[in-house]
Image (tube, rainbow, N blue to C red; front, side):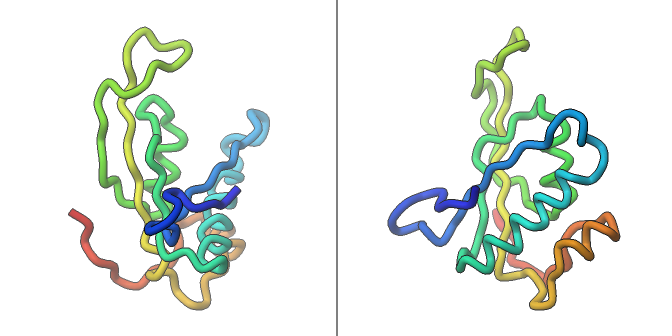
Length: 126
């Protein structure tokens, strides 16, 4: 899905959700879905994306957002009780400025090249 992360005044910022089947992990499926998400979100008129609860223990998700050029803008220690963990996990917030995507961005091409999206220089988020 792609939907507003914050309804109302901040509805130009979206969030998304997708899951890679266990048998497809390690094949680039998550990268392709992430790249397609960026393309779809921009085409729907969103100007930014924010994933507010990326858990530190989810190595694949953390690696994906880092690879795709998202900026880690928040860290919330001891945020979540997750099944299988005997401690409270840390959550990260990841931001992407969709206005920096190149106009000729092609998620399938980028996935074949196994890299993140080409972007114009973006503002530094503090």
